[in-house]
Image 1: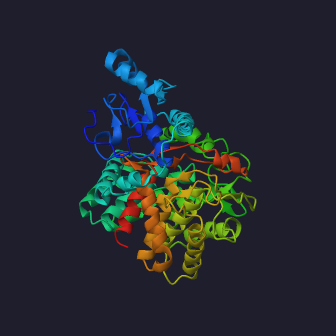
Image 2: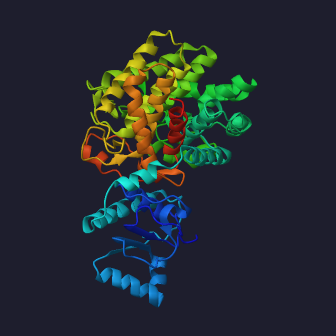
Image 3: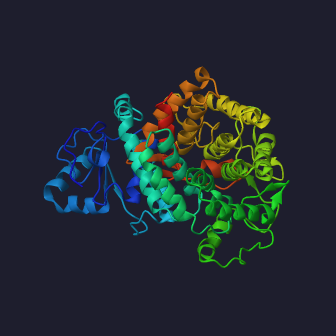
Length: 503
């Protein structure tokens, strides 16, 4: 990576790396800086340097990864500059990889890096006078052209769709984004790619061990409508019926995972099932207790799949199943202030509004609305749920950044990007459809897009909360690690930008 040659927009921080900006440790570190209002200029590496600069007079903190530090110490001139900087009260921080596994695929390492780097950045800010969300730095980040961000995000989605070959949560996110690029972004050239991707994934449709594995079923209906392909439709329908007949229920509602007649997940023997069995059962909060938790994620994935198949087949049982989730969330999760708590157990809400948990409910409602007759009485009820949640969100949007917090109504929670990107998309889309009042919600949406831009870095978003289960303890949500990601937040950011451009 070549050294930066242009003047830095925010020179109080210098980050020097030999590992490069794609290393997960550096991605996580920059995420923590973005979340704390420390931004980097646009350009090669977006403000990360490959060697110690000659002039350190404007710096307050210098952060080096271990190979960069070793290089600086071995060079007499660099060592002298670094020593003088430290003697004058400058703050020097070393980034060391505690796992020694330099792979973005190590999920545990990502969370370890997040927690480590959060502590480091808090320490740096406490020991320096570096500014947070400074006006010049804010302007630099917000001046980045939307077209440049759109091109980056579109390239991300195309790459993700091209290599995807299994059913999971991201199938839905990436395919929804690609569909939006085609239908809203005018990218008709991507239609053949989308068709090929759905056909490839549909060669084998394994048992839906949890609701995430129904992500993308809407695209099977799309494929049928575009090409007449009937085979994938019937295979997916068999899996949907299998879930209806075999999944445990609580209060009449499908739970998140598992089969009642096979509580340990041992009966199915397909290669795909064996490979994914334990992560899909035990990594998704399923236990052999039938009184398991009910989270908003269910509406996100059940609603999309059953809504699409209800419309495609005319089978009312699918529509009824989706509406059961809507009614449960409305009755047990939506609070008097309109905000929607993350989940419940046996009708007892946890009453905690986790940012992305609220998004799961809202985006599930939106995806179901897309499949419904506008004259259906449930359509207006669902839209009112979104409107009420939006009024609740307006009260808690951060005035300075446009972001929302990881626990929406808790002032000590961290600013969070994935929920903000999703809210921006949902409400911008509803405004465009004429479903929500533009004067009420457009200012919120535009401010939210500014928040997304503040967290944007190299095709992903900083300040992204890692996945969460459901808890009745607020400290669980407040303590969730946050870092950079280009998985779930990037499709929502892309769809948000496409909609914001049409406001």
